[in-house]
View 1: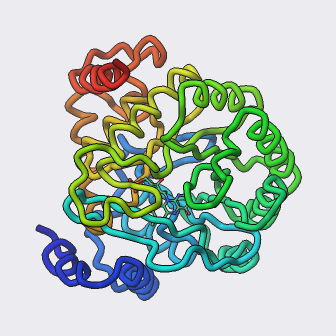
View 2: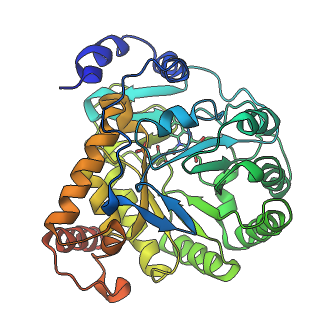
Length: 376
Ligand SMILES: Cc1cc2nc3c(=O)[nH]c(=O)nc-3n(C[C@H](O)[C@H](O)[C@H](O)COP(=O)(O)O)c2cc1C
């Protein structure tokens, strides 16, 4: 057992979740989190190029951990291939009343209803301006709670943060901002994305724009979103945000708290939605798979199901940053075992009819069967 699980977690579990998160940011800022010796070692089989950016490895830190861009370089130094800051809104806002973050210990999961608490685009941009640029940094954009013109908020985000980001994310999928997820509807989404892409071409030329979606979508929603993504030429998608669903089998005291659920109970549903988008976009749009990753096996399953990159957040609460190195090592072993020279070769291998990667590996077949079984 690593130092986090044996020393830190037993103490942290008695501290309220948001205070513990604040301590983690503080410890990273002050370089107090021990690093695995081989955290940033180069692994050629994990290096990849996605939406025109070069990644040292495909394992990223998901949005919500470093909402204010305080510790991107510290997080990268623990071995992530990329770090996504935010969500950032144009104006600073306090978010929802506390408590708003809950650990579901028995399920190794998290529920949050933070509500986009953040320092605002101007302050975050000033922080990023001072940062030594390294690795890949994504800036995830949101809208202010009381803003009436959503498109204008995202455009302001592009203008403020675009110049400092390696990619931008239009987040229309957090469940804790009233009306936000309605922006995933066909007409509002097309209008919003066209405005964002136009702003990108003015203020952040060449910076890829990704769309982050919810896992709680009907088949019609998914077809509409895929059609819009292909039509307006978004550079990629992130699948998925937290779920408002409560899968059967949850077994924790706080499971009925309002908000978005993340961690292992989200693995299966979010991977199914990922595979749906891989099929609907015919493998033409790079996908980032996120939701419930707690092991190299989980990361591999997302990749076989169509993810070019993966991200995680909730499992870090239970496993610490050591998990990043464990996942990369396991991923590398699995690729080698299945005969893939590079991670890019495994992307979408569960769907050879789309990916053209007709390598009949057992894991690929199992992932496809799992997805098919869910559909029945
Ligand atoms: C406390 C918390 C805050 C989050 N805040 C954001 C956010 O501001 N923007 C966003 O796009 N996603 C946010 N997320 C969602 C994560 O980026 C990710 O999509 C989700 O948690 C699923 O991944 P996981 O199961 O590995 O945690 C947040 C998640 C958590 C747990």
